[in-house]
Image 1 (tube, rainbow, N blue to C red):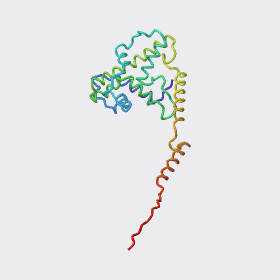
Image 2: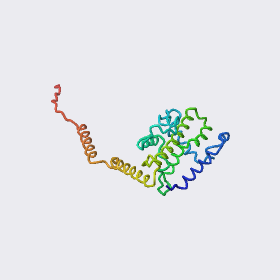
Image 3: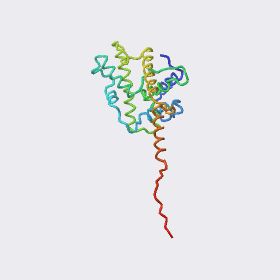
Length: 227
């Protein structure tokens, strides 16, 4: 799959950051990283300060390369789907629409969520808590396990998502997502264009309101005093 120049630059930046020694990390700023807004995404998206770490990531951190129970393709698929639900889309299904608004942002954020040692630079500066560091380790372990399982699935001849996505797999997946999104948009009523039922209800309410304001006349005998 072809990635845009922006994504390649992002990945290159990540690889450069990984090479920075731990002792020098506190001297690095978000501006120097150059993708600071993307790097900071895990903090906002995952709300690391208070959210509990999902069980699937805890397990991945404890046994990232375990094959227990992974004897058949459906088992591999099941775990990868669970990891996708927590980590987001993997880089193998990043979509390039050929425009300025390519899904590079989503792909880059997915990479950053997975390759969290990069995020460690930001956390060194912001004084990350022990819980956030555990999040870092758990997400990194989850990403490593997902890649490991895809490699095992591919070796065994499993179908996607129990293996890396081919261009055809990615195209099919996005076609399904686009179809679902289109259906949801079509079913959603347009607030600016009221339906016939809405207009009828409005007229009915207006009629009732007008009726309630009708002036009522009552005839009563008038008795005048005689002087």
